Image (cartoon, rainbow, N blue to C red; front, side, top):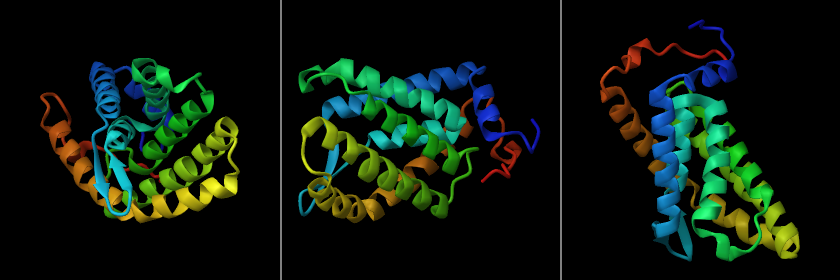
Length: 198
């Protein structure tokens, strides 16, 4: 694999691997199951941290932005049909948020290079662009509330839980990498070339 290869081309080539398809499908199903079970950490005052974002981050880190974006579509649409039918009509804006999230995870964490700085950058971008930006816009459109009212609630919440989410992300991704490289037939971590696009 060329060291100068485009990160999106490299990510698309991951789709040729059965390992990529199987692990991505597994992580998508775990994400949906976590959402359906409502598994989360509750922090004072009225803050909650879910764990679904770890599956999305793992897909982006292991297989890149192209696979992460496709997984975002699958996770959102399948998650809607699996348990959110009671929430009303499907709205494609949230699928777009999931696609952008997959892109951001892949850009920050692929090719399987994890550091505290990358974890902070990835989670900060996802919180600001996806959670505060896009999701607030979609909630304004679907709920009819003023964006300023929603932002006043969503900005502090996303910034307050950021340090805890970064810590969870970093240690969980370290564990994911350890398990990934322990799989039979996986090339050594030392064989993964650095990407100069990041």
